[in-house]
Amino acid sequence: LPEAGLVAPGDVIIGGDSHTCTYGALNAFGTGVGQTDIGASMATGNTWFKVPPTLKVELIGRLPPYVKGKDVILTLIGMIGVDGARYQSLEFSGDLAQLSVDDRLTICNMAIEAGGKAGIFPFDAITEKYLKGRTTRLYEPVAPDGDAVFARTVTIDLSRLEPAVACPHLPENVKPAVQLKQTRIDQVIVGSCTNGRLSDLAQAAEIIRGRKIHDNVRMIVLPATQAIYLEAMERGYIKDFIEAGAAVSTPTCGPCLGGHMGILAAGERAVSTTNRNFRGRMGHVDSEVYLAGPYVAAASAVLGRIAHPAEI
Image 1 (cartoon, rainbow, N blue to C red):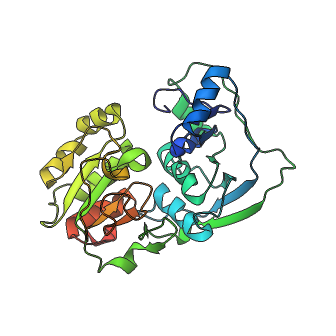
Image 2: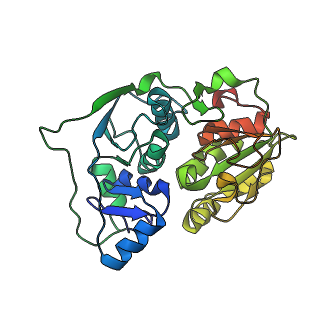
């Protein structure tokens, strides 16, 4: 929807998937609702919300190398827990110019993994540039009132972050990648609605290029949309993945929700750029999913274990 210009600042968007909160990256209010709610809204043209309290997330400092949006949101979830923002809006503020729209989409995508009703970024020059040429309709950006009251404020010093990994079986079980170097893996997933955008594929390709995937690892790449797939082909990323030994699929949720293509067997471990690592999420109840960003995922595919990208 963002790619096609169907999301604009100030919009209220409901969808039948909990990751509808992704759209807050463009200064909109997006949230997932049940199918009955969807049907009622389509029939009546109305919907109903309790206005959620707001948890303010203040981002300060500069991002270190290899640290991107996925590491920011995993760090936050590790700090507040999977219910730390239950029925609250996560409002992001601070030094945001260093976060691309792709980073913001990833961060808002996983607001629900902290229990959030929505994740919202302010409208700025980065948002405006992204929307230019995508949407022709008028939109009205929104911002907090000057006297806005927040349920609480959480501050994250970005300069202190490291590439992060959420260990089984909850997104809040977050550790630095460097602490998990002994963890052997069987599969790597790069893509999905969380980290399947062009910059995500570029990060993984940067690590993979000219190298081979470990003999004991399967690597599956899932571009988020057909347009991203085509652009990744034009830029040579798909060639990099295939030459390294990866399988590249058309856009799909695939193994993220245990659907198809990469379902884990008992005892297998995967590093995945998807959004949930609950027990049995990607296959057998005795499999394990470790959530990470594209840099860590690609480095792990090469070394056959969880790896910091600086090791490559």
